[in-house]
Every structure is written in structure tokens, then in C-alpha cells.
Length: 410
Image (spheres, rainbow, N blue to C red):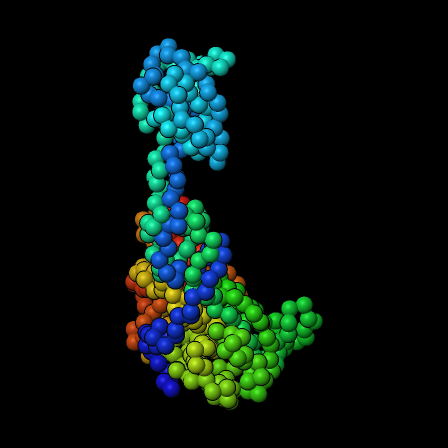
């Protein structure tokens, strides 16, 4: 077991030790946001024949020209192709996506002809291929459409649906249990008295994990005792991921460490050289991942965002997003980091054409979370940061569009 590891080493250990879950088959529309586990090929050709691009008249372009008249031989609707071919001197009215019969090589729009009972009169010549979609224009059976390892979005799902897929092999969602530790915690809806509170940090972690793709099974509240935590930790079959909130502090009995040992979990590291969330613990129970976060919501949120998040993404084979840290200037002074990485919540501000950040130092942790637009990361060993100095900044993912809209706020 490693103790008080560096922030960068903690991230490295999590990336190395957490294993990606196995694939499962799901209905194609359930693949949204999941990682494709194997290459997906087209199962059908689309279109499967020549079809019309729009409503109009299918004809032989060699018979077209100003004043030319053609007999309307019938109607062809989408999904109901006719077996007969186009006869000379005639045309078929066709609907959009209807199969164009043999003998026709163009579809002229309705507004470009004059209808005369069972005839049409053309106003001009029609070029061959007009308003036709050839067979296989979208894709042909056997074409590689989406490579494995890709996160499936709505558009890729639509493509796979169109190509004949009714189910997909995707990486399984992590089954999640969250355990809030503390004698003072009460379930939402309960009446509380002085010294008690609701488990906002536990539910925050649960919701953040769900946003990343986890399947939440339970949020439990247990007493501040190792035995209670042991009883609450589920077996591997019930949970791939367990997040405990609270009980990690160093200035007291190590109840989380005691509980982890009791369930035969291997503690990879205990403690990280970062503030807040320096008491973060990472454990493995065979393949079950256990992240133990501090109970204070201010520390729990940062521990989740910077340490648990990359591990949860790795479980689903989703790409990490460490590269989203940018360098920008800070608007006010920050004290020296010392031997620990210093994390501060911040708001983005515009100064002329430049992006700056302003550290938040709210006395209300919950309000600070809501106001924050990202995290300033001051690396360990760095001295005092002066106003105007450059710092690393991780914008919250849902606020990234703000990076290009700051001028309107300047």
C-alpha cells in the first residue's frame, strides 16, 4: 500500500490498476453513450435499389424536351416497387424513396411539368440521373461503418439502425453502490435536528457517476463504525464500483481502512498530496473498484472529479479528458502550494481578448460548487501565485461553450 502519493502518481495508479469491464449485447437504441466493443459493419445495402430523391415523374431522359408529352402509366409508392418496366412514351409518378423502374433514368419534379389528365407535358429537357439515388449510395453490405472503441452518439446509432443492426456489443455499464458514512446523516425527507444533515455529498457522487455512465443501484447511509461499513459493502456480483463518502480522515480511527481490510480489499494507496481531498483512498477487491472520498462535499467533489472520474471512464473504455486543462492567468493571489497540489474552484472572466480565472473562496461550500466554472490546479512545490501569473485550469465539461462566449461578458 502506498501512502500520501503525489497527485500525478495517484492518477497513474488509477489508470493502470482499474480494468475495463466486459462487453454485453444491448438493443441498438440502448447503446447511446456506450463504447462499441467490436467493429460494426453494414448488414444491408442502402438504398437497396435505385430510388427517387423526391416526389415526381420517373421517365426516360431521351424522351424529354420542351413540349414533350408522356402518358402517366401509374403510381409507385415508397416501399412498394412495381415489377413492370417503363414503356416507351410513358412515365410513372413516384414518391420520395420509391424504387425507380427499369427504363427510367431520371425523376422530374412535379412543379416542372404540366399535368394534362393522364398525361404530363414537359417544359424542358431532363438530364439523365436527375433526382436519382443509386443503389448503395449510403453504404453497401459489409462496409465498415463504426470502429470499436468509439463512444456511440445519436448519429452513429441512427447509422447503425439504418444498416440493419438491432443489437450491439458494447462495454457494460458499471453497477454502482454509494455508501455515506456518518452518524449525523439522515435520508432526504427525514426530520433533522441540530448536528444532523442530509447526505448531499453521497448523492452528488452518485449523480456525477451516473452522468459518466454508471448504473446506480443503491445509496446507503451507515453509522460511523467499521462494522457497519463492512456490512454495507456489496459483493462483486452486485457492484463493479463502490464509492464511500466520509470516514477517511487521518486524525481519527481509520475506520475505512479497517473495513476495507475486513472485506479483503487491497488498498492501492491511502492519501494524496493534494488539497482538498488529500484523504482519498483507492482500493481493489479483485476487480471491484472502491473509491473512498472525504465526507465534506467540498473535498468529495474535487476527489471525484480529478481521481474517481478517470477510473470510471477507464471501466467503460471511454477516453480520458486530462487534456482539457488549459493555461490561463489568475486574477488574484494564491498562497504557496507547499508539498501538496492545491485545487481551487474558480469562475472564468474576460479581460479584453483574454480568458482569466478568479478563485472562489466562499464560506458556503454548496454555493461555491454551484458558482464554480472549473478548477485551478496549482502544482505541488510551487510558491505563491501572484495576480496575473499563469495557472492550469480545468473547465467543467458542461461549461466549455462559455470559453468561446466570454467576450459577451467582458
